[in-house]
Amino acid sequence: MSRLDSKPESDSPAVPPGVMARDGEVVARLEDIRKTYTMGQMAVQVLHGISLDFYAGDYISIMGPSGCGKSTLMNILGCLDQPTSGKYYLGDEDTSQMNDDDLSSIRGARLGFIFQSYNLIQQLNVLENIEMPLFYQGYSEADSHEIAMHLAARVGLEDRVGHKPYELSGGQQQRVAIARALSVDPLIILADEPTGNLDSRSGAEILNLFDELHAQGKTLIMVTHSDELAERSHRRIRLLDGKVESDERSES
Image (cartoon, rainbow, N blue to C red):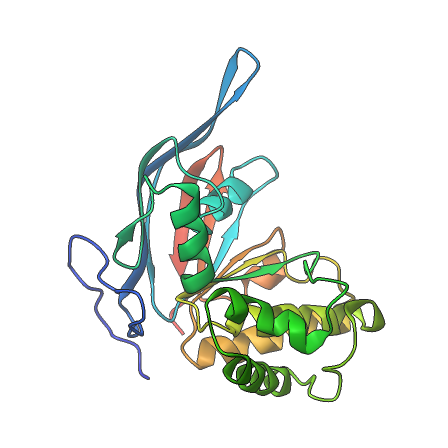
């Protein structure tokens, strides 16, 4: 698919569940997002009125120093936490007032997660780890197996599907995590320091996989401390003190 030159002018995202987003379409929107945590008798405001649009097919890095609000913002984007005020639209749904069950449901159906520590289930083999999100979405055993085998091959692990995570290298474990994130064909893939625990060679292989996913039209949002990693993305959002300091897009 080719990128749209112009961005949509609609007032809110309009990507219903189960409908594939088109390049350039808004898939997520943050409107004046604020987040305050209460620590004892002290209120600590972490995010200060963040408003951003995210578009289908974007490859985005969220950057900034420790304590700037990156992790809090990622948790809100991933429906793992809710803002204190403001609205977060994921597709066509306002998640800001959802209860825990609804948030869990939308996470499972519309988001894929890739963590620095992989978060694989050690008792399950590669195939079973990839299948896990499909199980919770009600896929049949046959369909889950077919999808998981396809994804294992896609990340180069078709000959390791019977192995447990502890029998794999760090790079291989992260490949399993990527396959698992892709299993439900999510609207957005969220990656939190995805190469943080990897050596340089394995990290480069994972980033090459991200490049391939972006070329295939996937929407990726990556939190990173690394300027080098961020240069691989095509849009770089920098936070400072809970606010957007800059939002830059590459010409290419």
